[in-house]
Length: 65
Image (tube, rainbow, N blue to C red; front, side, top):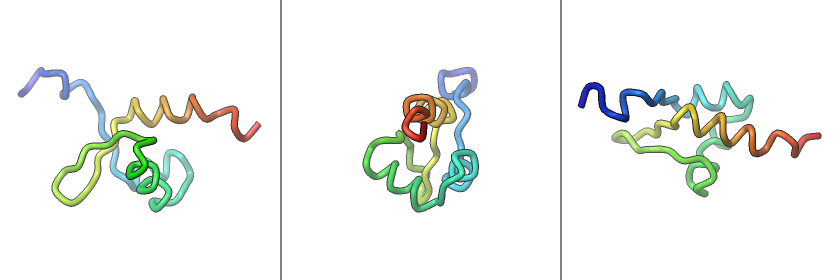
């Protein structure tokens, strides 16, 4: 579906998301499985929408302060 709504979404792998968030891949898997971080399953791996990572980080940025 070229030009459809999914073509506008950038997806990240679990490893890319972990690097971006500076956490382990296991932490990302926990967030995905708990539903805190939305993801889609592509065969045996997950893809996380980049906007969901940014949203998660913005919602949790004040926790460390």
